[in-house]
Image (cartoon, rainbow, N blue to C red; front, side, top):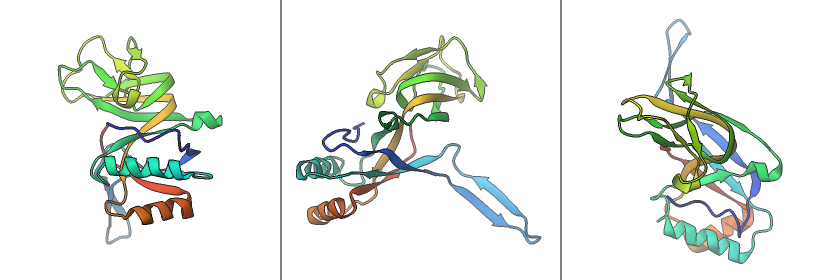
Length: 195
């Protein structure tokens, strides 16, 4: 999976990240509410901002848009807030679900530290953290043996958070794409499910 361009042009960090959940809320006759979530973990919508965007930087983003075929193909984006001396602890992010044969799972981040790995909510010891090698150069966690089918792996860490996104717009002219970039110095990306 491709990764959003991190230089030429260089975004302004931190990115604007919005957690998106899917909750159904029913108001009961007595005024109470019944709530049910459709997703176990949130998606993240991202707005990428730029300072003085050059023509070559805008062309790089247009080429990236075309290569993804608009909103069709998802891609990774990392919140490189640490470059701006902003350190975030990312908690309980989904890494994957066991299938009885897999023992290595991607952590949704890179350059991670202070990792805590959980299986079905229970912290695990004796796991190995692998630097890089995952999708989009993400770090990975390796268990001594494959996890049973249905076991859910989550991880908390400090580092660069990897989010799966796609372009919000699917159909846009090059002129409008460029005008929006230069007028607003930002671009909106829509979060997608997946690790």
